[in-house]
Image 1 (tube, helix red, strand yellow):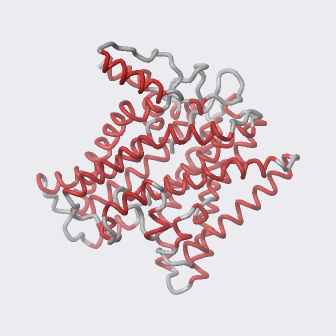
Image 2 (image 1 turned 60 degrees about the horizontal axis):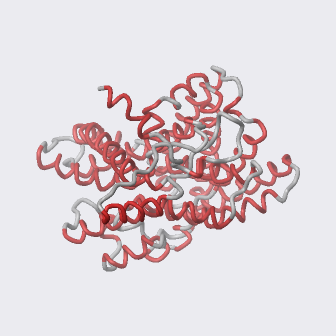
Image 3 (image 1 turned 120 degrees about the horizontal axis):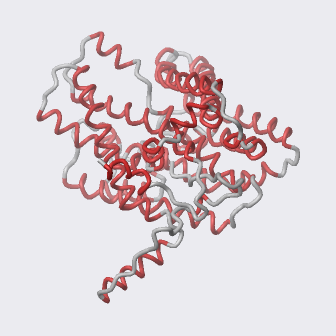
Length: 436
């Protein structure tokens, strides 16, 4: 029990200055949660027998996981922009090097693992796997270069949720240049007006692409299809640099912002799939309804952020040890959750044989979500967290040499684990790296 209670401290992010804003990882927890519930519920629907009318109706009105991805994109925009807007921008080479060393090893390991397993055991009840007819090795190459959606017009075959990571990488490549242009607007009020106009334009552009173009169109799989979240994160970051909301006095009124904002986010996830269904014969309706839903989601994201930064309960809950640990490990959880869920659902259907959609959904939520979090935390501790150290390649080479020579050379326990946390903020606060 003591080990379990002490786990968040042992596995938490470590920064060179010891400073850390836990609520940012709390926001990541709020982002990963609907993704897990959606994918677990989807597995429940696939392993259940033909649902009754009432069961199908309930299932059809559950929030989609895309609302969590939108929140992830906002967090990425916020985190990436902070060092640039706070006056200590990283060198361009260091910026890309950190992303390469920080994010690529976990991603490559998961993709190679999925390739090996799926090459020998093709999945059942996994339609995404069969949408792409190209050989599996071609899908692997496309995924490793983050171009699967653009090349094949489908979500990554080996690990479908990686579609969002492809857009993240596109944003990372462009972010330093976009933020530089944004900073050239000297007056902050003018930046807010221009930034707001760009956000609105990106919302409209994204809905035109998503509703007006076919699923296999290359633009559907680019950052343009949903880039307002990144832009919104940059705007809110600009405001935070000036106002330092995490340093201000917490107030209970902001807890209401967190509650209403998150409920609103879930509601936008409910209506997201309904919009196209209801307006399928009228593209103009699709676009107008999609724009309204995206604008509502953007407003809810701002409310959630305000509640996390200024709310009394919001700060306490989103800064609690286990919430921040799960949020901090969300990149690992996101990478491994679908393979874990699919394998676990196959075990459930063979062992339990649920006789209704309700039973199968409850079973999947109760089993698949904890299993995914546990597997993600193990992967985080073994793979992702070591890669947070900026000098991990040197440590790895020294460890190999030490192993070959029969000696040991452990890494100091206080070695910095995440260079992205070292940004220009007041003492007592810094921001974790963008592992979305």
